[in-house]
Length: 425
Image 1 (cartoon, rainbow, N blue to C red):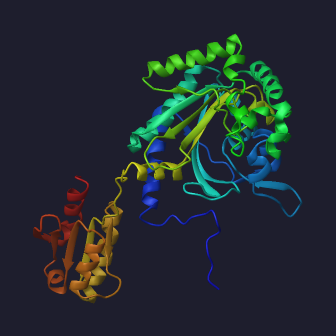
Image 2 (image 1 turned 180 degrees about the horizontal axis):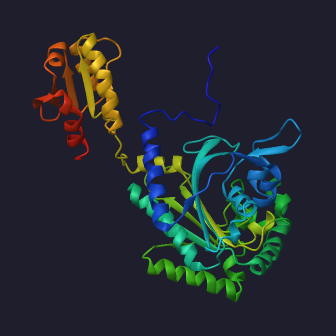
Image 3 (image 1 turned 90 degrees about the horizontal axis):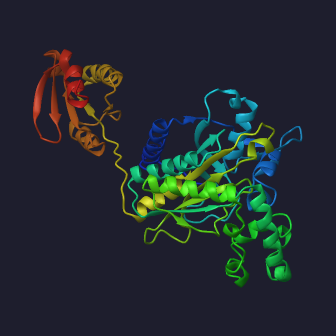
């Protein structure tokens, strides 16, 4: 029987995996500059964490989660997003007791959602995300947005834009909720079943409905901007001032609501403007989630974060025709002729690798011409030729494949020679 990969998943093969590593390195180095530290949480959690944290009215909880019972009948769910897990870890491990606040964390790993696979969207997908928990300050909101944009810029993307909105505090959202109910209720029977269910529980989700997005009532729906109280307006305006101070262009979109229930105050998305990128333009999204930590059993600890799709970033690089600067070159290929020379080559190989020099030999007993071909396929920078005559004279011939220059090196100086030419040491 020939097995095939499950729908909505992918094999990341050599040649592509190096691109992923390059992106992850950029993200980790950026986090180090901003003083964010890595956290690793389980791939599955108790289902209730997501129903309470993400929100029962969201598409994620209602339609997209991979949920199963374990052998003792406990309901578990593969994580569909990272923030709820980080909030749970923050509470369970009492990170709020650390005198250094906010707690600044990042994560990289697979998430799981059962949705229709399409370009750049998978059922197992990879996210990089950050969370800053413990401070309610528009300056940290600006920092989070700045960090996200820094990663895209370091990767080389140019056609990106920031879209931002304020969802207001609890009182502002309550006033907006009542206005939305009054707006949609007279004609709610014209909307999909999900919207009808959400009218009284979370009408903000109606604005995020993809099925009814072209309905005329969508364009005339009350804007959250009209229901922000003074405190919420002041918070949002201060954030916009910080963004301007950081020379970060932005567009305010009153209809941006994001797809998770825990958001309040700041909500934002980073999108690609690249021609041919596709219908789904969002690269990253995030916002403030004051109240989430309390919802999962912790003390009052406001937070903000974002998550970005690594697959979407790779697709954006393709759309802008940017090739990640990754290679799989071999520093040195040792071509050995004869059993004794091969035995010596194995020892030399170990010495080179111990010095951090990527090295390889032939394992197929090829003739010299075949070994040169193998070195060429591996893009070897140097080819070292060792035969029994060279071994008897305790010498080795080294060819620089870029210049064509060939040198005869004493065998006991070979590793030092290679180290000097490869690492400069």
